[in-house]
Amino acid sequence: MQYKATPFRSLGRLGLLALTLALAAGAANAQSIWKWRDKDGRVQVSDRPPPMEVPEKDILQRPHGARAPMAAASDAPMGAESASGVDPALEAKKNKALADKAAADKARLAADKARSDQVKLENCQRARNQLTALEGGQRVARMNDKGEREVLDDAGRAAEIARTRQIADANCQ
Image (cartoon, rainbow, N blue to C red; front, top):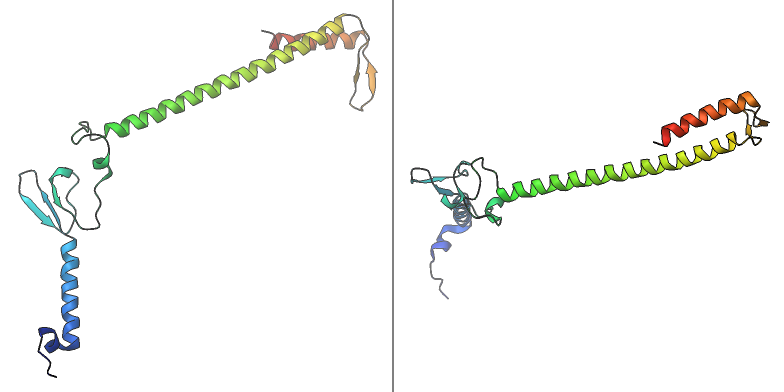
């Protein structure tokens, strides 16, 4: 049986390897090509991405793995950016988040004030009840620092009435 000569057989293994590497390098190099139209309308070709000021619509070719920017995938139409270059949809989302945070802070402050008012109301009621008991002439006893029960005399009762009135005045406004 006779072998028919092909271009690959005559190259040999080393030649075939060199040809494969050359083709692969060329293909890899071709994949990293960027093409875009500059502001003067001329087509530019480079292995680097175009400058940021080049609009997305003027990019003619990008490398295989390069992704389009996220702003192009948004719901906003092309050219809808403001003069400052800020995406209106992103700006609206940011403003909504700030408004939500402000509303949550306001609700938290209102809840804190309601809790504080409830504590003051309870302290006021306790102070009034204590003041009524002290002014009613009943015998009143309290625990001293040794843990012993002692009955208040007239001077102790007067001092306790003055202290309880201060507490009532502070909480019953």
